[in-house]
Image (cartoon, rainbow, N blue to C red; front, side):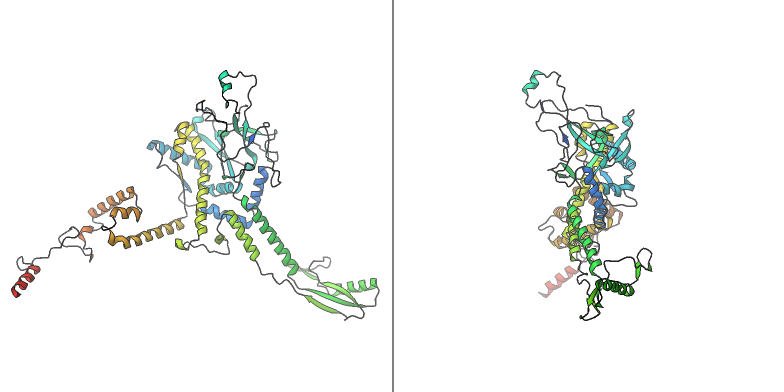
Length: 546
């Protein structure tokens, strides 16, 4: 195979030669552009929906320009990417990574470097929107080939219409000598697969054409797809694909509504002109003269806002002029009523809701409804919960682009070894910034519910429930939180910020005299009359009465 443009960091296969399989390793997205009939090729759709991926991406981008579809896309992007003045939209979480603090610090530093060269904090909305609309996103990792240990120098965006992922059968040399033991292995003749990218600078050139196409190594490109796959055709789809039919229906309904209103809205008149016994030619001339004399001559120019005289242009909304022979009822004017059902928009609203359902956005988020409530969870619709889970899946999928870039950066700078990445990557998490208002309301409501349950169960603590069980199950405190909370309470008691609970009367809430005591002890009564207490006086009085 010819040498590819770019670089590769894992050319060496460390797997044992005894590990064989008749099934080649598939792409993680479930898509195979597996070409057996030559070096170049392209996907052709027989059904005529789309011929190439470029046509499909063009369709998605045209859909995004529609106002209704654009509104739904903005709802998704705004929920997934939260812009804040001070905090970054995404941060890396390494608490579950089994590595030293030095390595974790280096990983955080390189992740911030990747975000800086991508300018992600400023362009996060555009980057996520492009990925969501196109269904895929590609970045080229530019490094210094003379000094690869310096890592990635630049990250350049590639239009998905100009690049394509290729998996090709590697051709073997027929003249090469085959070892005798390999002929006994039934899997030894299985074809090997080469993976690379085909970059076409000019989008007008068919993808995979021999003209102006450049082969790029697989490790040079960082890419992320939507995860939606048409498995019958082997094509990556966008989340907008399900809304193609709904959007086309909405467009046709809106166009038909406009045409109907323009043609049926005005009231038109029928003028029956008495022409007597005039011949046909003279009757037509007489009708034309009457029409030009009484017809509306002034028209409204929508471009300039002026009223002008325009007799030359006939409109489809003109009145009807019909001749009537002698013997009829003479000249008559009849008015035709306009459309009666012009105010009904139920069909438009139906297809709008259908479009939103296809895009995964709750129907309550349509601009006219405004039914979304940021109150209690009982008032939040189930669609909002589904939408929140959908956005979470989008975030997890989009994080693959950062994982790929971070992998290349760490390996090039020798922070980790290539074989250690698989172990570390499973525990690396990416935390996205959530909407502050929604998160705060949700957290406040959860805390109120827990405290309500705690006040109800408090009389049974020590009889049926232990204190630790209540802290774990009701308050949902972890071991770390409980340990930290106990230390903070002890420190605040020592400093006098909060009183010692053992020194407070549980009934009255007043501090006990004589200092703290154990719960359940009988409080000592103060002594009077030289050491004789009130209880002793009452006892002696009762004995004397007996």
